[in-house]
Structures are given as C-alpha cells and as structure tokens.
Image (cartoon, rainbow, N blue to C red; front, top):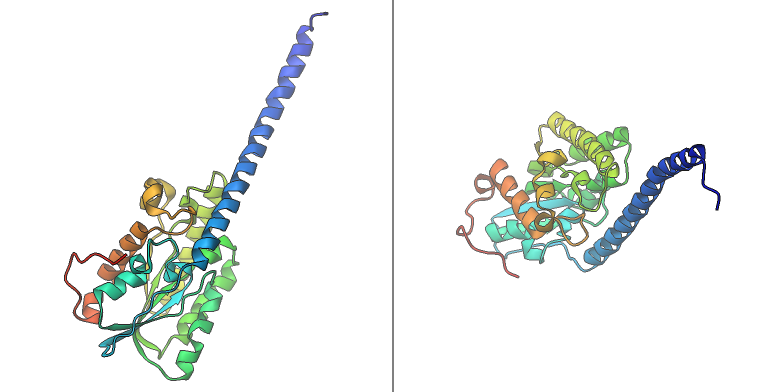
Length: 268
C-alpha cells in the first residue's frame, strides 16, 4: 500500500478539523431537541392532571383573586396544597380564594380571566398575577407584551384594593436547556421581566422579581430540588420559596389578617 504523502495527511487532518465542530453542533442540537420534546410531553401530562387550587370558607374574612398561567395552577407541585396558592390558603384559612389561572396563558390572556368578575362588580382585597413565562417561551414581541401588561393592569382598576405581580424566574436556568439556547432564553427572560416591571411601576403595582442570571440563580444551583420532572416548571420547593418571598414583600399578614400557626406543614 502506498504511503500517504505529507500533504495528503495535512489535507485530511484539515478536513477532519472542519467537520468535528459541525458534528458536535449537530449532536448537541439533536440532544437539545430531544430534551425539549421530552420536557414538553412530561409537562403536558402534569398540566392535564393538575387542578387550580381554590378555597371558599363559609365566613370568608378577605377575598383573593389569582390570575395567570400554569404556575398559578400549581403544575410541578407535589400536590395542590404544595402550590403557591395552596400555601396561601393554608396560611389564611379564612380567605376566599378564586383561582382563574390557566395552563399556557400569556399576559394578553389575563383580561379574559377576570372580565366576568368585573362585569358583575365583584371586589377583592388582593389580586395576585403570575404570568410572563409563556411570553418568554413563545417569544411575544416586546411591544405587544408591554401593551398587554399595561392593558391588564388598567382593567384591574376598581377590582381590587391591592395588586401584586410575581415575575418569571430565569427560563434559561432550566436544566433542559444547553448553551447557547440557555443564554438566549436568559436574555429573553431578562428583557420581558424588565417590561413587566415597568408596566407595574407605571400603575403603582408591586412587582416581585425572581429573575437572576444563571450563575447566581438559586434554582439553577440545585435543579433537582427546584425544578419539576419536566425541568421547566417549578417544584414544590420552588413554590415554597416564592411564596415566602410573596408573604414577606407583600406583607400578607397585614393585608389578609390572622394566619395559621407557624410550622404547620401542607397536607399531601
């Protein structure tokens, strides 16, 4: 067999060096697609079996309305009682809680969730808004998102004494996302969270910002604890963390009255 010349070896090595990064990129893209497909399938099954938690005690002392997406439904929590709304109900058993959250809802869908309540002239002591994550995932144009947030908050005037908006955590922190998609999702989250915070500030509405860069993100630091099985939705631990932030920042004890004794665990 004739030995390859030095130039032939160099040529083949050069070709290999050019193809290796492409092959690695294609493999990474295929793995990413599988991860997203798997996460979507798991998330849909979880969403289909999760019912938004509500509470209606016979002698309600205060009323709370919850608007938003699957995070308000409680997808990813161990049980409805471990969702953010379930924890709220556990803390304030005399609160009437109306939960209008829907899986997949975007900010533009919120007004429809409470239109009938406003038409009937109902009033609430507190409205919680949990929305924005789907606008990141579906790449809602920034201008449309800002307009939708402003419109929603204007429509909420007269419906509640207090409105609190809970912003999305960093979608790019998901363990299902590889770089560079994770970086892209982080940038998109940061941009949309800023817009929602701006709309809230304009309407004098409290905005709780859970966004952190991935390197500083509590949820990214321990994904097994803070992400549900789909790697997208929050886990029970995430809901507990966000609820404690809500309770502290929004001063729920002052707004909603007496709470249950500290240390009472949620029911399974």
